[in-house]
Amino acid sequence: MTSITIQPHSLVGRVSVPPSKSMAHRAIICASLARGQSLIRGIEYSQDIKSTISCMKALGTIIIEHEDYLEIDGTTTFMLNKCEMDCCESGSTLRFMVPISIAHEANVHFVGEGRLGKRPLDIYYNIFDRQGVAYLYKEDELDLYIQGQLKPDVFEIPGDVSSQFISGLMFVLPLLKGDSIIKITSPLESKGYIDLTLQMLNQFGIKIINNNYKEFIILGHQEYQPSDYTVEADFSQAAFYLVAGAINNQVILEGLNLDSKQGDKEGIDILERMGCTLVPVEGGHMIQVDELVGTTIDGSQCPDIIPVFAIACALAKGQSKITNIARLRIKECDRLSASVEVIKALGGNIEEINDEMIIEGVDSFKGGSVSSYNDHRMAMMEAIASTRSTGDITIDHKECVKKSYPSFWEHFEGLGGVYHECNVGD
Image 1 (cartoon, rainbow, N blue to C red):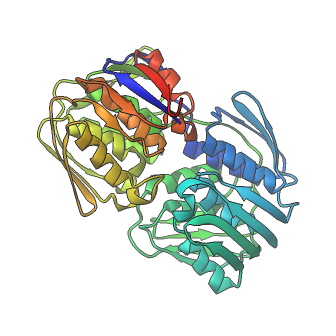
Image 2 (image 1 turned 120 degrees about the vertical axis):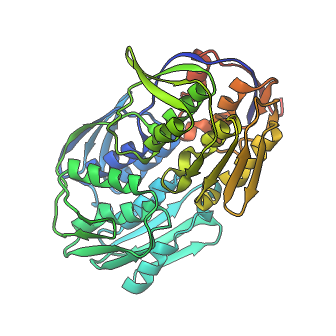
Image 3 (image 1 turned 60 degrees about the vertical axis):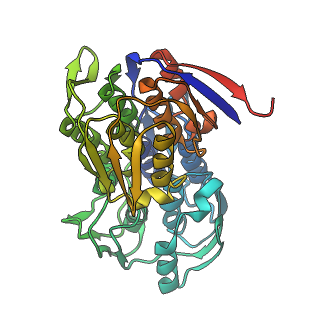
């Protein structure tokens, strides 16, 4: 484990926003389900993306990895009907691959690491019980065996669970030999992620009828068509630099698609309510701010960016409230409690009340030693916090950013971030 101590320094310069992990997962899967060759450009080999590549290969897909693009041939996908899938710590990979793996009669073993085994799969287990798919699992550990085949059906899914369950079904149901319906039984959270799935399915020739996000009608007997696709920049990673701009750093973000359907683009609207403006500059965009003011944030549609936006709120004038964030508790760590603990430790004024954060702004953080909880988004949030701190901030598990953004520390240093490392145990 490597700890780092970051000295307070402003970030100044340009950064090329990494490609969207959400879009890359979806593109790799759709290309792997198409009979023929596809080219997926704009790939960064984070641990989560490596997991999805590995799992598709386990199903028989031919994937050739180049420096920043993939050649994918799905002609042989599903030729292996017995396999093991290692999802590492990727919740997206797990929830997408579980239904895909049993598009045909198969015997599949899923394994993983960290807290992945604690992330609920009851939505799928209920489907398996109804359809007679055999499964065996361990509590609090990802060691899941599945035997059987998914059948066309009417699937009733609550809208307040992870949208990954809905997306996972959307990938596989068009391949089945009959029509299906996904009925959403409560208000749908994370609509943006469903939009990304529908957009990618359309890119690869799959049609799904969206009845106002209340039900999705999916015809069977469809065929994925090979496609060449370039992954767009990731708004969940851009959020770190957008917030950096809001707290008086000067970062130009390169590659943002302001017409993106990514739900985390909501971060721009939030910052505008807080007194910021996203302005175009040569080759990119940057945040300008006169005075950062508190606001109320509904986290239901953009949970991944909440930890770093809690930093913005903690340094804004007045009170902020962040609501509808219960799902933060089942991420790589309990990000709700973790964010509160970190901001308190750094000298911020924040309270956790039920599933909300109540924040009173302060002028700056005072520094200190905090845990990353071995969670990539917590570590990056803490790095951004250091730019408005009067003292050094020490973070453990520096390497955890590899899960989604392997080049983060390199980019952070390139913008003027200053830190030194300490290998614990040396």
